[in-house]
Figure 1: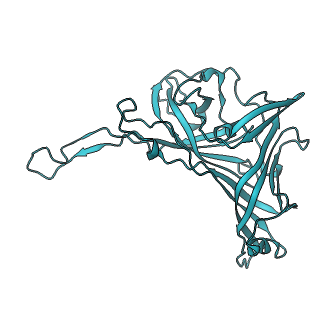
Figure 2: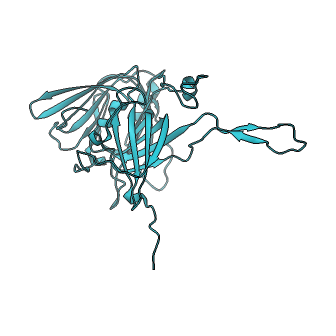
Figure 3: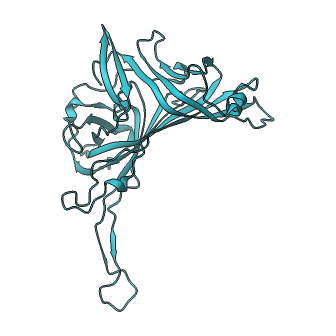
Length: 324
């Protein structure tokens, strides 16, 4: 008796490589696996069908359709083992101090696009290759673990758009191989607000918004045809939320002051405690937009500290990777 081999998400593999120019270049064999537990949601892919409502027939039916603007949005979620994905949001300069490599990120006024291979592996694999991928928004989130499972891993959610897609059956062999490093976890985080470390953090997130409107890059042009042109980033925004248990009115005071939080405001992800395997984000012009706690009759009082920053003074990662 012959059974069907069904596609299962556990066997999927997502890999990526930076393009040399928009929708061009990048050898996938030289790329890397995106991250641990990577998933893609692409339910909104569309051919943008345009309706022909009447062609002379005496009825109320649609008379046909033709393909219109192709749209390929997708959300990609994973647990990071390094900070390479930030190069698709910021510009990066690679440095070194002996065995440890320093990567300094700065604001980017253009977009770094990437080539993505989404391999749904089977005896006959279904491999989707998207080109001209870019990140519209990114969120790094974390939550304390209460037991076994995967909830304690730091998560990255990228809201992306691709220009075009093709399909095949060959899965590229990645020279660097599969992921061997451990993921970053909730217990590797340190938030400093106004120069004071806040230890009682339950969960939180930081988001980057590139300010890209897809329609700004849709043109009446035969070369682009039904595809998007190069994305145009506009206003860049940084925001976030940290939920903390509170014992006094400190957080309320930060909100009530209605001013920039003075002192050092940082978020640190530190995997080994030595400073040689970490990401440190230092914020400029940090504002607490909300921090008024609600009544919790059956538990500890906590509050969502909603914040925004007008700029980032620095983002620096340190690890053993030569170049991002």
